[in-house]
Image (cartoon, rainbow, N blue to C red):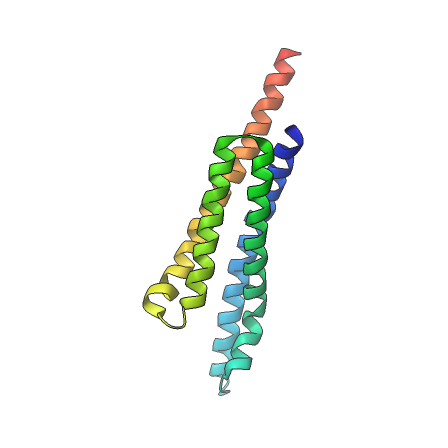
Length: 146
């Protein structure tokens, strides 16, 4: 069980960093498209999608990563970790749905997509903090017992 908890702790940290990178890729893609328009170029579907490709690809990898987190959480045999992982999977699934529908309803799905991204980041950050803080407290307790 301790091995699964260590894997869980590291994996949730990696996912948190991936979400930060995901937000970076979104900003890069949008501002690259904006730069193209400011330089008098027109944007067709291909030239719009090109700078957004890392954002889209990483988004799907993050979703797969949350499924791995859920599987690892079952190995920890801790109900709280399992519920938190289910929450992350649900939020990221919602993010994929919002991203897919953003072009069709920019005021709803398009507006909620970035807000949900920050909710995901906050939730993952709190889980990551809790996991590393718990490890530090467990080390202190073990040292005091010895």
